Amino acid sequence: MAIGQLLRTLSRRQLQIETCSLMAPACTLDWYRDSYVPVLDEKGRLQIRDMAIYNLLDELEKDDTVTALYHKSLLYLVSNAFERQKERPLLGMQKFAKDVPRVGELPRIHY
Image: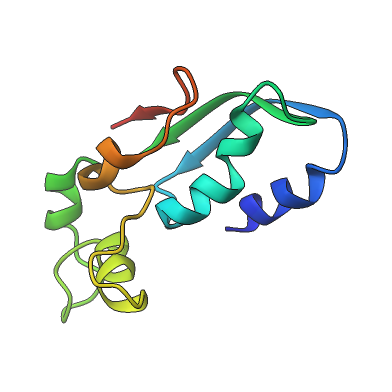
C-alpha cells in the first residue's frame, strides 16, 4: 500500500517509471484499481511503463502456514480475517487474478 500511496502523490508530476514489481501484494483490488490502474494508462501525467506481479499458486498459498493456529498463507489471513468483507479480493492471490483490471498487457502476473 505504501507504493500505491507514493503513486498517488507522484501523479501530480510528469514522470515515467520504467518498471514496477510487486511480490504477492496484500492490497485489495479496489486499492489497486484506484492507485495503480490510472498510472498504467499512457494518458496520465505519471506513467508506469511495465508492471510485474509475482504471486504464489493458490495451491501453495493453501499449503503455507502462518502459525500453528492458521494453516494457510498470510494473504489468506488478510483476505479472510483482517478485511471487513470475508474473502476480500487481494491483488497477490491467484484465486482473484481473473478480476484484476488490465491496461493492455499490464500487469504481467507470474506464478
